[in-house]
Image (tube, rainbow, N blue to C red; front, side):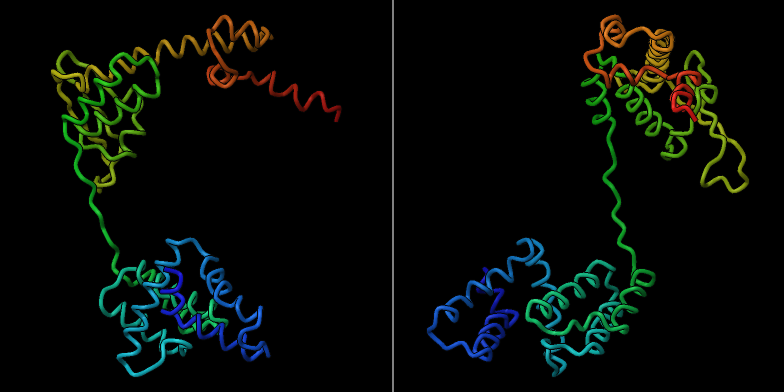
Length: 292
């Protein structure tokens, strides 16, 4: 593969000529090193990067050769016209950037001046970020079966973060909510009725008049029921709050870390610290003891 790429960008001939022009005789020890030198030059980048640059350069070579000009060394105006050709054919930014990097790499590895540093090229590259069509990739929709399977997997979990994320996903799914809408919900924004929830969305990206709207979500029958999952989260959050409040009071009363961990059944300092909020008085002690 190295030999193929070396030949494809004329690196073998370039290095051989440079070695010969430097006064090194054919058959000498130093002359025999030049193939290894070519290999090392190509290996200055990772295999995947080299393949990407090489393919981009070959596309440029095919284009400019058909126009009757040289690909290596390239004239900056020819490179600028090539990028214009790509944009004219609705290329996105990615292949245009790849073209620049491929041409730049082929010139630098051959010890030639970089045509892509010319202002013609750099300006068109910048313009491509604004005028090139954006590639949109719509994500595959999540099915109810996927959500049910996920909820079944964590049905016995007491991890507050897991349950919170599940509640957010299910409410987003059943209420057609955007992330900013579900993430900004507060407990007071959710009204619990016997058969359904009412979510109060204060403002929405699509709400032109910035009027709050209500989203009604019915009870379900599966493990992914949004009504049940929300109540599960609120109960767990309440328990979490009591646990955090008790641990915070004990820590601010200067109970030792060892006793705190034992009493709270925490295995590590990081898990314990996640429940504790230092008081303002304790935080002020830091600057007070500095003697300023």
